[in-house]
Length: 210
Image 1 (cartoon, rainbow, N blue to C red):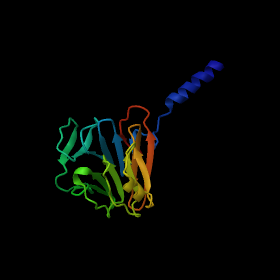
Image 2 (spheres, one colour):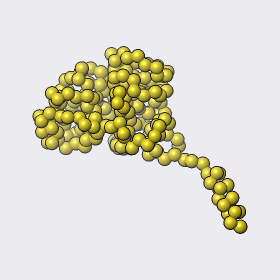
Image 3 (cartoon, helix red, strand yellow):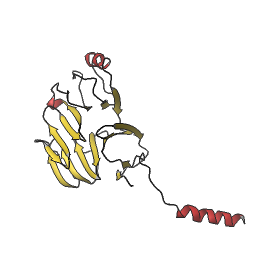
Image 4 (cartoon, rainbow, N blue to C red):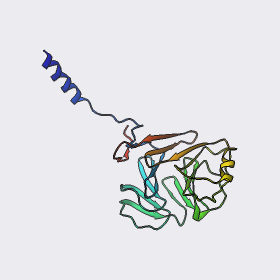
């Protein structure tokens, strides 16, 4: 009888299919941007309507197949994508707009996700809903506004006193981007959420299953 119960339990377990949860770090939810930071660089992976975009801010630091590859600089990669663009002119792909003038902008669901990058350094962030600070130096300073929803920067970033003083007087949430975590921002037109998930092994960034 004991062995029969064990056998039936094994049959039951083998018949159960695994249904991944949305918060599973291998899955990227729709309308989401994910920071992928390694010791080599930082990239941003985007999923909108099951179409994947990868924005390289510097050198290639991830090996993944995507639908569209966007590059701030014309760096060589071995990434596979349907189409590749360098952000020397604004481009709109499937309702997402990418720009690189005085900052990098990703406009998705009527929200503007801005990326500070030193080569485009101008203090013009009034229209930004989110800001990521990419490699600021010790002279870095930009003006932040209270309508800003969230500020992101790399862990161990050292800000100067002037910016730290300014940061203390604005009412915004701040998040650090780390090579040991994935920070994911899901943006709807009237709502957003930010999740930080510990990396537990190889990540394959599967599309969300419904």
